[in-house]
Image 1 (cartoon, one colour):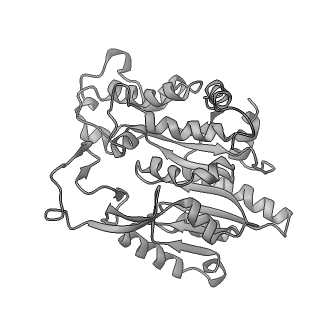
Image 2 (cartoon, rainbow, N blue to C red):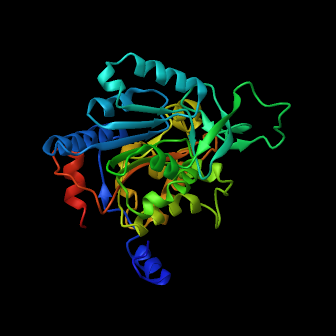
Amino acid sequence: ATNGKSSDAVATAVATAARFNGDIGANADEVWADLLKEGAQLMKNNEQTTLAAMEVGMHRATQCIEAARSNFEAYCLEPSPISFQRCKAGVQKVEKEVQDRIHLFNIAAGESSGMVDFSSSGSTGDMVGGVGSNMWTMTKDQTTNNNNKSKNAVEVQSARLDDVIAENIPPSTDIFIAKIDVQGFEPHVFGGLSNSIKNAQIMFLLFEYWPKGMDFIMDEPFDGDGICKASVKILEDLLAAGYKLFALPHMVHPHSYSHSHTKQKNLPPALVGKKLEEVVGERPLGDIMANCKWYYKLEQDFFPQEDYFVGFWSDIVAVSPKAKFEPSTVTGRSIAEHLND
């Protein structure tokens, strides 16, 4: 994986390049749609090419179906039993030609195979390891056991994505894009994707980047030496494999202001009247650790009364050194323009 270089040389190279190549002014849904168009154009230009798209954490079947309709072989994972049934029902409503290109898996992506606890209500907040956890307050009930688990607590099958790929996607099929959105469980998912990342096997990775959520899932502190460790490791591993990083706009929970009193009072003077979209230029892209800590600072600045705890997040596009595309979309052109910066 190091191409004969010493580990020190690789570490130095990563540290030197530990930055984003740029930002993309589009949301994750728009980027997904654009990259599907880029891949579809590749397949149209070369009829012998078959490309795969992966969605890890579905909730609904919409984007999986979108990939299949764009002629991708779509491999889509949803661990929640309730959400999986909804996704399955959605797929069964589309035309057979599209159904035949969809491969559904009722499993959780993780670092290992086995069974994991899962909080399953069928909502967007379903999560691995969520039993006894409250993401809204960022607290965990340490007394939760088998006798007092909620009715939403279930066990689900877990598997490494490397294994899912090896066992289901033919070697002749390139993985053009994988979208990962797993409510802070991303460090575990990427841990099970390590071989594919080292080999730069997936051309485009689109994933949610929620530092506080990842620290919460990994039992890391929200300040001090442990802060951002899990989040930044994902980016370091991608950079070490030659991926280039692009940041999407930062986001906050849609109920943040209605929940927080800071909408009415006690904002720091520098932030009075300042809207979230106005701080995008302040986000550091030249250093991945500073970038991660910026999301914590943003929460402290905008919600100093500590009545909103969910934090801020973004999405990231990681582009493989093996990525092949002829940019024809806004996202494609934006990536191509800064790929060699």
